Amino acid sequence: MTGPVARWIPPTTRPAVLVILKGVHTALFVSIAACILLYLADGIGRRPGRRGTVALGIALAESAIYASNNQVCPLTPLAEQLGAERGSVADIFLPEWLSRRIPVLGGSALVLGLALHVRAWLRT
Image (cartoon, rainbow, N blue to C red; front, side, top):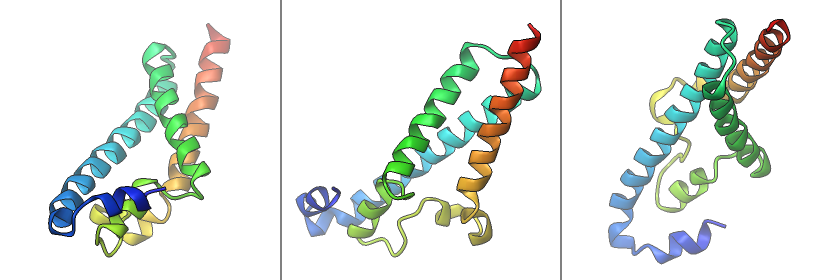
């Protein structure tokens, strides 16, 4: 799906577009990770509410996109087609041992947050 987009970008501007893409990719990654942590924190604090529901919705939407794309962020192939050696945003600023575990850690945090939210809802 990213092939037509990559072909549309002239070779002379690809390095600049790649920097912008990595910045957007990083911002999205950090935002989604923050949503997961917020949802978990609200579950730990027994504070179910609209904020947690929005954070969960964002995290689940990203999870669905990630899962439907063979467990690869859709921006990763585009970054590689534009010339990045590795397109994964996690490889930019995280150690490899941690970046390989992001899906497991994020998924576990979501499941734990969900269990904590259910417990909080049942107690209210």
